[in-house]
Length: 387
Image (cartoon, rainbow, N blue to C red):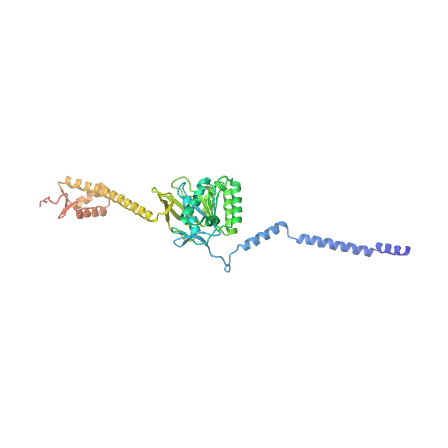
């Protein structure tokens, strides 16, 4: 036993054994260090992940892209494509909510006036953050009146919410929750300005539009956002930085304008593809929405006739002034004056070119306002020219 322990102790003390152990340990350390050096840093990993994301967004000649699916069309021109963000703008009380009612009714029944649904029994999420509950209820009442659909169908396909009391810091998450729960194909947000603390906050506005666009793409729905135009009469831009960013990102921008007679004109001032034709609506004597295309055509024709009459009156006034000047010069010469002399005098008096004055005299002679004998012009056809 004692002899065995001495042998083991001798083995431990042998230099070659110690050297081998040290070498093995060194190799292990070098392997660990090498692995650590070759392992990518967190920054490099983040860069690789970002590059992978960017590559997934690359469009190549072989890339297959799904064609746009429009939720609505007007005379065959599509508006409010799915998976995209859109806008409806107008001055205050210009009929924006009325337009949303028409679009909703078309989606509920297939067609409303010239607005036609391209979706089969879609679920529509309608979020109103501006009106009180009683006014929001009128939306569903009007849709029911226009579509004549049963209550059960409307309640299962039109999800209408009054969110006036909600805060801007919860509205986006509330919208996300409702979209995730109901899976709508079309979302109307009547009052996008309520989703931000300030529509002039550029950072907040850009983030909101980005988040809404992400919702569109993630859930393959069309989100139509209502936003007021600036208050100035001649400024048709949507309000603040929020309006600027929305107009940049929106696939379709519709505009509402109300005439003095109460007709609501709906146009498409901005669209990525086909421009929607104008359509018009109005409220009838019972307070219900009605097609106003025929009345609009009459209104346009009446306005054209009024403009034409105004322009003609202005032309007549100019002609009368020139004729009065010509008659005054002729009478100064005793009722007759050589045409060349009359032309020269009118050129100087009226500050007109010679061709313009010559054409004017010819027209007055043709119309019987002036008379001509030989090379002289007279104010009456009864004047005798002495030879």
